[in-house]
Length: 240
Ligand SMILES: [Zn+2]
Image (tube, rainbow, N blue to C red; front, top):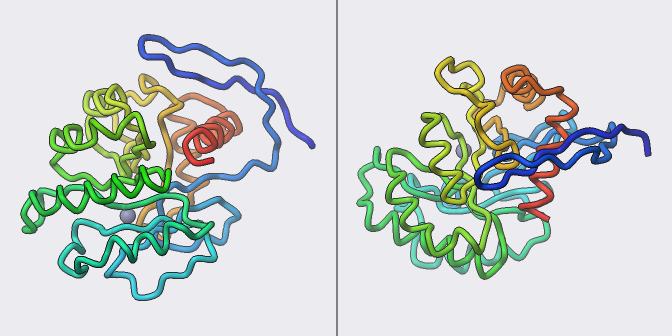
């Protein structure tokens, strides 16, 4: 296998330690943690399905599935067994997106209940959880406390402050960054532990994951190959 040796980063709570010279094969793929579109660019993508909203659920690609908080009213009490049907399929890599959203009218108590059902399923099926969170981070941290050591919890589309990013990582979450963060001037991405990060294109069908990586590799001041290898390593740690 052709490749080269690069430096990987392993984060410890108070400092970085470096695992030097991991082998990196050249054919490693870009990983798109969260998208609503099938990619034709040879990336490894997790296609997200919104239960009750997406009409066709095709399990031939890697996918995640869950009840988006926006769709709670489109689902009935049977959603847990519907989800279980999908969670046992081999291409199901994660549960979600699910979570909390304070910008919608569905009462937060109901959202919390549905989200917690997802967390319980994630424990039962050993799946990472891809989380949607809008203006409810305190509540999210609270609900996730009993689960954070049991299952990987990844907040997708993260586009908030550096302080919040660090707080969430300290609480045990990983972050899939919104591509717009790469151009935010008041956000020092280099201060975040690389082993807690992912990238995604979400609902933007025009955006290519390789361009997202390119922008972040520039911002992080790290070679694109090294960044690819690091994200692959993160993926292996949480998903396989
Ligand atoms: Zn999404």
